[in-house]
Amino acid sequence: QFDYQQLAKCSGLSYSYFKKLFIEKYGCPPVKYITQLKIERACELLQAGKFSVSEVAELCGFENVYYFSNVFKKCKGVSPKNYK
Image 1 (cartoon, rainbow, N blue to C red):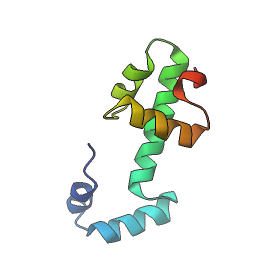
Image 2: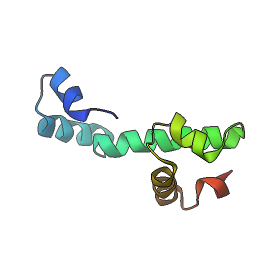
Image 3: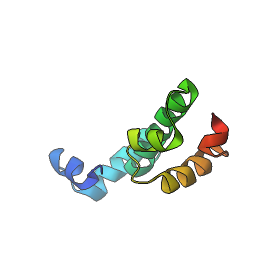
């Protein structure tokens, strides 16, 4: 699990200020940005055809395949299985 509070702490900023600056720079909160990166990586892995959906979920840092499938479908409009 990615620790956003620790990231802010390392930068010497409060989390709320860090989040504000992050949104100004990237257009979305850190949590959403990291999720988007994970889903883009999942797309690459699914297209490669070497891994199952469960393996892709694990490789991309999702705790379970059901949550991964829900997030993937919300972002891409199709299930990971159908994305392949």
